[in-house]
Length: 122
Image (tube, one colour):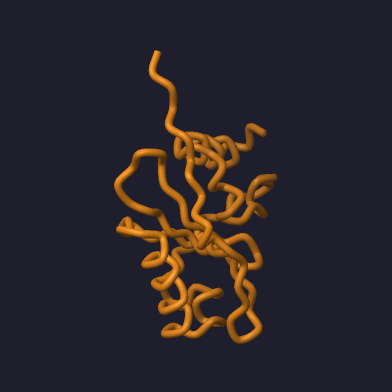
């Protein structure tokens, strides 16, 4: 049985404050992988993940800083017009979870959670 690759966390990952707004910049890759993933997490736990991989971790960090500064820290943290809200299911205990908290679930668990709450089976 082949073992799962380890997750390599870059030393460039860090907490930053831009214009008084705190962010957590996470840069990581799979052991032996070709590129670095970039995720910025806002104070309320919202996770913003870049689709493209970066050749090195420094380039990923510079992209995070550049994007936050060009969009403005407050606008970036609030999502501006780039946020697509999820439907809020009535009486769903999971509806108060932020996107960052859902990041620990697999896609099928998120979909199942929505269906379960939709039909009131909790």
